[in-house]
Image (cartoon, rainbow, N blue to C red; front, side, top):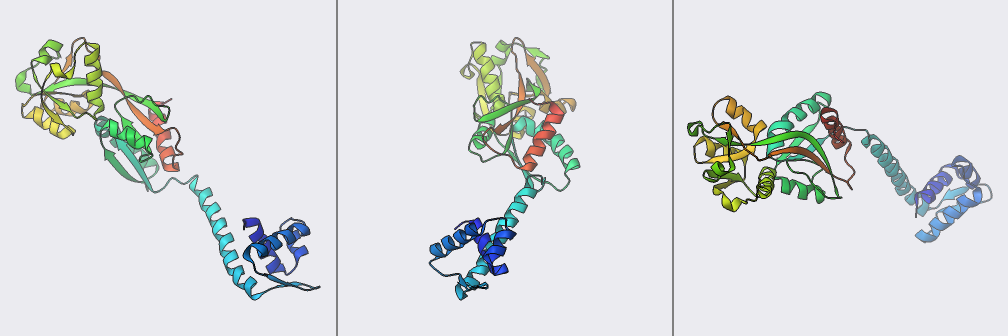
Amino acid sequence: MDFKQIEAFISVARLKSFSKAANSIYLSQPTISSHISSLEKELNLQLFDRTSKEVNLTPAGRLFLNYASDIINTKNNAISALGSFENAIMGKLFLSASTTPCNTLVPDLIKKFSEIYPDIKYEIKEQGSSDIIKDILNLDSEIGLVGTKVIDDKVNCYPLKEDELVVISHPSLKLPKQISIDELLDMKLIVRDMNSGTRKTFEEELVKQGLSLSKLNIICEANNLDTLIQCVKSNIGVAIMSKDVSNQYADCKLIRQSSILDMDLKRNIYLIVNSKRTLTPTAKAFLNLCNEEFAIK
């Protein structure tokens, strides 16, 4: 049973004529007859009583007409809804972001997006870059913002802006604006968890310097930004974090910032999407906004 057979059946039922039905839906009479014959054969029922003047529905035909009309109406409604969906910016935007973009880029992007689409709701999920990448690959998230570059054919990765990592410390330590790697080795260090893009960037630069985390005096791992900052403010140790995030605390003189000599701790914040996934219109609109703001390629 297919839509052409059902549409032919409805036309014959309405016009009580094979020839008139053929003209109304621009088919030949033999084609209409073939559709009806195939339908009756599949249902194993006679749908029409045929006379020399007209055709009339059988009791089974009258019963089937109700269902046939519902089927065609459902099809037409589905086509109409899908046509509207393609251009409809509505509903909820699901956004996954790692700590740094969640505390720097996301608020401004949401504000600007809300000014354009005021009825959109948001669900923002903060988690480590590694977990976001997994969600994108598993189609559990549409758009992700991460602090590490993704090299995978299944992921489109767009750089948004540059970010720099710095050492943050309690003001009482009076660390200079620049410290050496050797000085860092002597300090108590608080680091982010293994899923953090910040930690991955720091570890990769350590490897370039011929070092590893095992050379550092790590006294605490924190899986969220607030814990890391509070530990530094309590003078438990120093930490590595985004300069953009730490600026607000440095401006209030709650912490100090220092760069590490001879270490390149600059990185990009990336927007990632699954290259095999068709985005919703709302997600596409958000991607377009990011393109306008950062000229992503």
